[in-house]
Length: 297
Image (cartoon, rainbow, N blue to C red; front, side, top):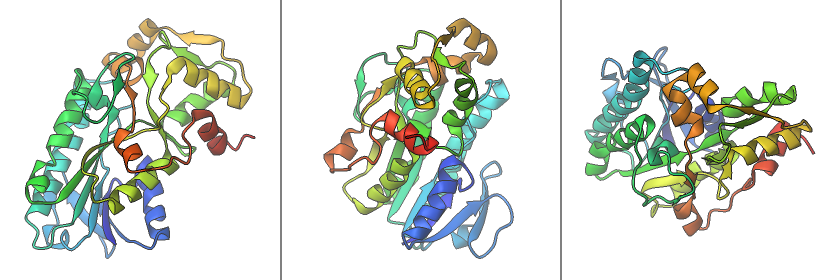
């Protein structure tokens, strides 16, 4: 297939592009600068895109978005929201007008769509939640409507915490845990839905090959885990104690509103639609995934 990828330098994109190339696909990147033969220029902030080169792809994978990590100032929240909605809308509208539109548009989304739901088991047909990230995710998915209306198969990948050795949440957690200073956050009872990056890449390829998959897809492990169990598991893999607890009040002082939406809220999400088509997870359990990435036996 000929595939266009946005967000190719991010945690997921930087692993996805070589995986697609290894599978024999021709990959072109959607970039903000330095266009070339295998790079098409766009600027979502200005609503600019090289529309003349955007047609003729079999599949478009849209991953570009402002990272949510860090303290949420008003400006940061604007960037988080607009990087998702404006970019998706621009790409979706442009593809809908192409003489040769793609058969498939895969758009990143997040389990933040469900908001804080405690121990409730959440599947793709569960109602959306409340809060900033839930509102952003809902608008993010709705921004792909022009492509859907044009007959393009649209998939919204609701991704959980990505486990990867090269960055993301795991990289931020490793320093204190390696020093024996790791522990749970808040009550520790909040569910974290997670996904191994190797599974996430395979899920993207699975979505591309299963034409029955459309709309929301929960890209998460079938075994969500509480924050307390996550911390204990990481400490056990690293052969370190897990004695500390970060109080919710301290986290709120450090991160403000972001503390609740990012790490204190609970989303117990299951990949119901992937399991229904027979997807078999390479790393369904957190301990196995961590041992694989941290090369610990």
